Image (cartoon, rainbow, N blue to C red):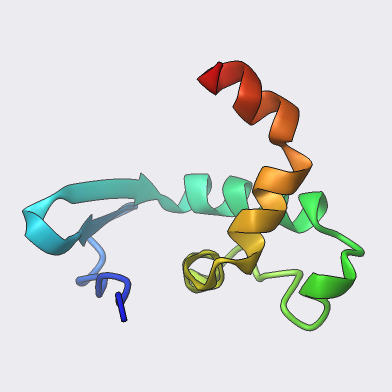
Length: 88
């Protein structure tokens, strides 16, 4: 089973993650906070997300929850028109 990459020590206000194969990604605490707030709002009241949401925007818990797949499917479900307009 695929495991999400382990995050190394934080480097200032930017977090860096190394994925399998050496790919690097970085993000700021502000980005994580805004993204988490958006997702908390998007799936508020969804019975499938009860007990999992809302996520604390000051934590990295959103990444674990997204990696489980259910939240990601909920995003696709809620934002279908936006996603289709980008892809097609």
